[in-house]
Amino acid sequence: MIPFFRKIRKKMADDNRPLKPAWPAGRYMRYAIGEIVLVVIGILIALQINNWNEIEKLKVRETNLLKELKTNLNTNIQNLEKDIEVQVIQASYIDIVQLHLEDKKPYNDSISYFISRGSPAPDVLLTSSAFETLRSSGLELIGSDTLRQAIINLFEVDYPYLFQETKRLEDQIWPSVVVPMFQKHFRFRDNLAIPINYEALLNDDEFINMWSFRGELRKGSTSRKIVAVEKTQAVIKLIENELK
Image 1: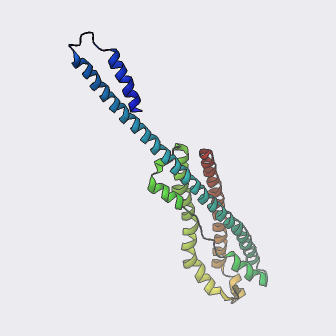
Image 2: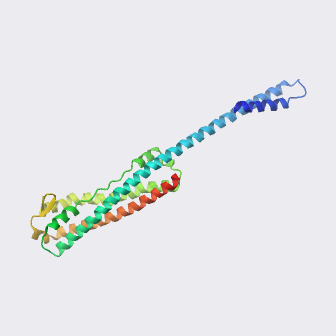
Image 3: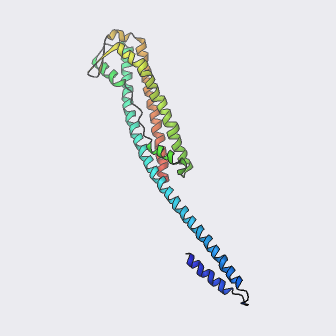
C-alpha cells in the first residue's frame, strides 16, 4: 500500500519540477513532506485495521457469551417448571389435609402420605455462570442497551427476589416451626408421617394454622416461579433477536 502511494507522490513531485534547476531544495522538500504524509497514512490505516480486528473480537466474544447465557436461562426455565409442577401437586395435598383436619374426619393412611409429600419445599436452583463471566468481562460488552438492562434486572433483581421470598421464608419457618410441630405429633416410618395421637392433632389449632400457612407459602412460591419463567423467556427472546 505504502509503495503505491510513494510512486504517486514521486510522480507528483516530478510533474511539479521547477523550471529553474537552481532550486533543488524545493523538490527535496516535496519528497520529505510526501514521506511524512505516507507514514501518517500508514499509521492511520494500521490503527483502523487494528480497531476493526478488536471490534470483531468483541463481537465474537459477545456472541459466545450470549449463547452460553441462553443455555443457562433455558436450564433455569426447566428447573423452575419442574418446581412449579411439584409445588402445584404439593399445594393440592396441603389443601386436602387442611380440609380433613378442619372437618375432623377420621384418620386414614392417605393423610400420612399427603402430609409427608406435601411438606418439603423444593429448593430454588438457578444457574448464573454465564452472567458471572459476563459481569467479570464487563457488562458493556453487550451492545444492546435494552438487552443489557434486561439481563441485569433478571439476575440482580428478579432472581434474588425469588430466592428471598421463597427459600428464605421456607428456611426460617422449617427449623423453628415445622420441625418442632412434626416432632410433637408424628413418628416417621417408611418415609411416612404417622400421627402419634390423631385426636390431639385434630385439636391442635397451632398445627392446623401452621399447615395452612405453609400452603399459602407454597402457592405464593409457585406464582413467583411462574413470573420468573415468563421474565426468563422474555430475556431469551431478546437474546435470540440480538444473535440474529
